[in-house]
Amino acid sequence: MSNVNKIFGPPGAGKTTYLLNVVDKELGDGVASERIGYFSFTRKASTEARDRAIKKFPHLNAKTNFPYFRTLHSLAFHSLAVRTDDMMQAEHFKDFATQAGIELNIARDEELDFVKTDNPILNEINLARIKGLDLRQHYNQSGLDIEWHHFEFVERSYRHYKSSRGLLDFTDLLELIVSEPDRLPELEVLIVDEAQDLSRLQWRMVEELSKRAKRTFIAGDDDQAVFTWAGADVNSFLSFGGNITVLDQSYRVPATVHRLADAIVQRIRQRQEKVWKPRDFDGSVLTYHRFEDVPVGQGQWLILGSTNYLLNPVHEWLKTMGILFERNGVSSITDAVYNAVLNWERLRKGTAISYEAVKTVYRYLDTEAVERGHKTFKHGDPTLLYGMQELQSKYGLKTDLIWHQALTKIADDKRDYLISVLKRGGNFSDMRRVRLSTIHGAKGGEADNVLLLMDLSPKFAKEYAHNSDNIHRLFYVGVTRAKQSLHLVMPQKIEKGFRL
Image 1 (cartoon, rainbow, N blue to C red):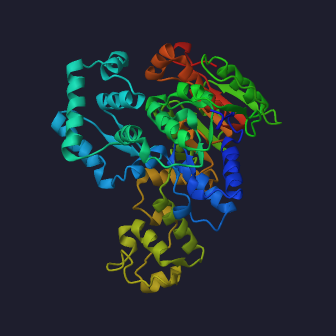
Image 2: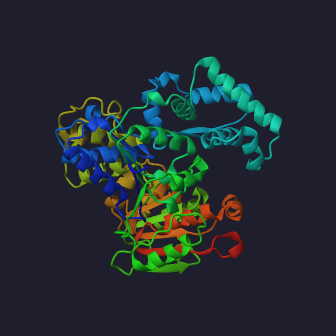
Image 3: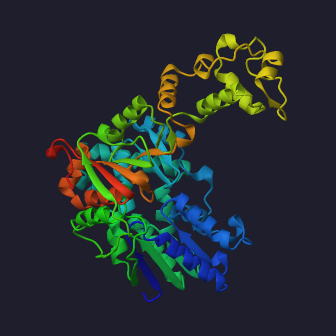
């Protein structure tokens, strides 16, 4: 595969930047943007790549000139001319669950184009399909405490449900497109980012696309392959032929963290050997037995755990301490509450606020603080600004008390939390200063300071016993998010956790 170029690189080495430079060069050499395909594991990554390309070529239009900056699922959807109405929706899954006599909750991951359920049978059925494995073989390897006849019944019922209604799921899209590869576009340049996270089915798509492309660029880091639960096939990435380029300089990871990361990664048995250099900064690695001892009161922090349950006590502790934070992209105080408090205090300081801001404030005011007929602020003019005096004289406002006395419709726990935040001298602009995330959710992210919770759930402990490579990769990703300092909360009992 002389036309294939594989780019390996450690965390923070600029693999995506390398690929975007390829895009810039190809566009600069006259290759039509419609003939360049840029495919990434997440929708966010492919969109960001497209937006960065447009900045250098502003005469191009995002929607019309870059049709192939997508996820592979999205490419299959459009290549097959599937409609949204043809896809399994949440209500269909619920209906199927009722008919099959199973329980499930469902969430669609918009970033991954992946449907998650909490039903182990459906999850394993989908995983077998993604991996291209025989169903019975996968069942035998799954360790599920479920009788085969029930497992098979659910699988057969699920297929019948979809076919009888003409519906498809996300995995169907991949299976159909690899069976009809002529529907795929003929690209001059094929670019694949985050390649270590692709499933076997997605790799079959890449193979077909690469056959048609004049030049192929595939970038990733097998040491960061942490989506095996979603069927990621790191072996396909490693075995895919091509000329190899290794980016050997990290622009994120400091020297002390690099030494720890290298010790972890050397435990991975099957990998592409890579020697890389840290950035020119020592940094620090500190260990603790309690997360309460970590100095998160100042600076930028990313707090990571292998599973969400590990983050729950940290979540509660941060609230008790009066520290604002964000968890999995959701703020510890909602925008509505935040804006109500902020706008009320602006009013008290003599600042006029907008019509919409007044409506937000009125929503949380004490029942007795606004006269009847004004409680929803229906009669204001959306084009005007309003001050405290005008609201009191014309729009029924009867108080100018401080926010936690006036905005009594804010729930008690939220009000107490905000009071403790302000007592600490906290500022609402600090909302993203502390972020909580699973390691999986933080992949691609970074922070000056990283707090990594090292304990493992029983599920992960079991996986470590059977496939330690996955766990080593997971914690490798975790430690390499740190730009300055890494703080490790080690397990109290070695049998309950993973030791570095």
